[in-house]
Image (cartoon, rainbow over all chains, first blue to last red; front, side):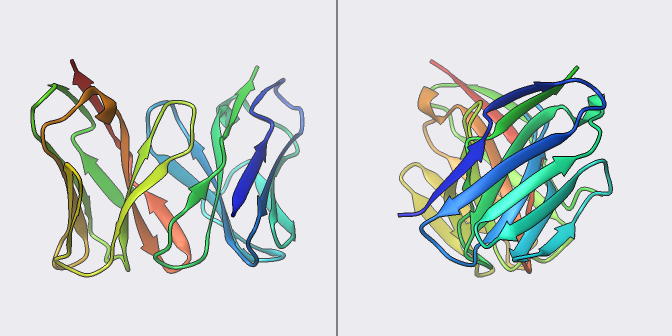
Length: 112
Length: 109
């Protein structure tokens, strides 16, 4: 069966510090991978998506970047965090168009 | 620009009542999905609708995809406290999955 792992679950970081959130998928190959950010009680904002190794599409110009160094690994990074980067970050994967998206448990990031 | 809009944003009803949540867009999607999310967790898929005019039923939940594939509705019959949560519609544009802002439903016993 397929599983998705996302860590850490919670993170408190000072303004100006770097960020690295990691997401890995098991039990499938060549998945589409997604990073979303969610404000409290609201919808998911698509940040980045990837259809293959090294292929990254950015949806929102901002302080974040993403990388896909391996087929089932997706990393969200920042060189210098801002207060506005606080939020709930979710990684997801699917098999392609019109298929179910499976989500990780999310990372609650608080920038102080 | 918000590609997907949902209404209402918040809904609080008594147990046993019926409700409808709407998802609208000016864009045509290859499919629309409905997800339900609990606090602190990732969304979980309820249904995928692909064909314009399609209607799907999942126990007390009825989902409809508009004929032009730009909108969808979710109808819940005889709501129960266990239906409480954030309901999100999501549209697929090629490889992108775009989510609406969500409808927060609270069912009061």
